[in-house]
Image 1 (cartoon, one colour):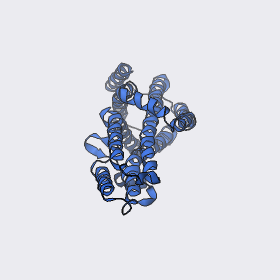
Image 2 (cartoon, helix red, strand yellow):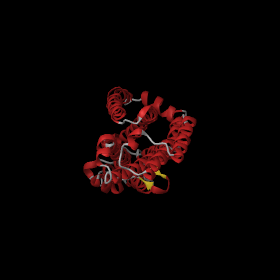
Image 3 (cartoon, one colour):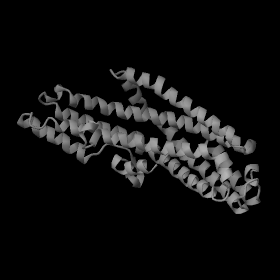
Image 4 (cartoon, one colour):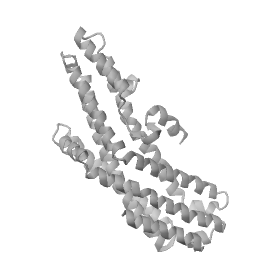
Amino acid sequence: WATCLTLAALRCVYKAFVGEYWVWLAHSRLSANVARLVRVMIAARLLSYIPLILSVSRMVRSDAFDAAVHAELHTASGGTLRWFMKSKVTGFLLVLSLIMAAQLLSVHGGPEMFLILLVLHIIVVISCAVFIVVWKLSLLRICRLRDRIRSQAADLSGGWPMMTREYQAIVDFVDEVWRRSGFSGAVMLRFGMDLVFVTFVIAGAKVDMALVVRESWLWIIVQVAALCVGLYFWAQIHSVCSSDAYPKQSLLSLAARHLGRLSRQDAVDHQGFMDCVKGLPCGVHIGHAGLVSMRRVGPILRLA
């Protein structure tokens, strides 16, 4: 797959510099330089999918992911994961496939453009399925610990050190499947590349609005929606652990409810748990961009 994308990108660059344009660009009011730039940007988009392919391949072959799936299926919440996979993921992929089919039918770029979009859509469908499964696995682990903290069993003597170790294991798992696998960085690269392309297309609307409405309106909506949903899902992992708002029912806010109800030794262990949650945030990290949290994502979602 990576080799095919590389060859397709090189072909796009070659076609751009020899001055060969797609029919749908030739009939627009865009200049030759802009049409050439479109070819180059599509080549860049094709290359940006390669890290995503490699990270997904690394993910599905990793021992951590395989062990997490098997362990989750053998827990009491294994039925929840099976139901989620059968209903939510299947339904989501069906809707996504319909949207992509509509995109393929709306773009009149000839066989070459159709083939490019078909290949990219297949990669997107597989990547979205992996994204949802990894996100659900992360959330299920956190929710199990949250249920234990919420229950009265959390008041039993000696339970807080074990929950602290469990939280640390969750942080390690989330970091392994998202950051260390390269998956979060690859997904963010795709988001960034699509935003650049969306900005370019919107700028092109000043020259040829009919072209944008005819070819790109559905694609723009899908890309903006994908960015918002992806960032919200990522921020939700951190929010369910460390949110200060009580209605969020996070690990931190639920643990705070036990203050004043514990023995002296348990109070020390309980404080150690809260310090661990505050000092070791659980969430999706993206390279130099840092932790994805609702505090950082909220303004972007409101703007969108």
